[in-house]
Image 1 (cartoon, one colour):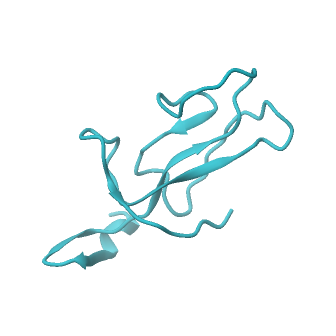
Image 2 (cartoon, one colour):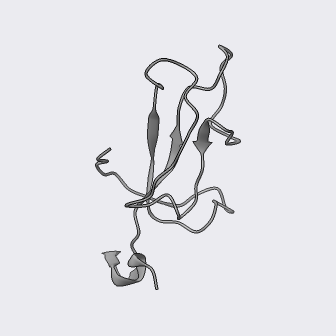
Length: 97
């Protein structure tokens, strides 16, 4: 049993589901200077969309540039492993690093 099963959201009543906030996009500037997309994910991170990237998780990414140039976003209220249909339950929120 994970922490997600202890919390549900009812903001979409009458629908309810386990609420387990996670960040879909986490990344740092990749090596080199060429522009890249967040999809597909790479060693620098990117569009990771995995429910394991939730509250209390630790992610290690290689640092290729001074300051790392960390970027995070795409918060979801609930997520499986990936976005098979191209979407998740998107929410706003605050992140403490």
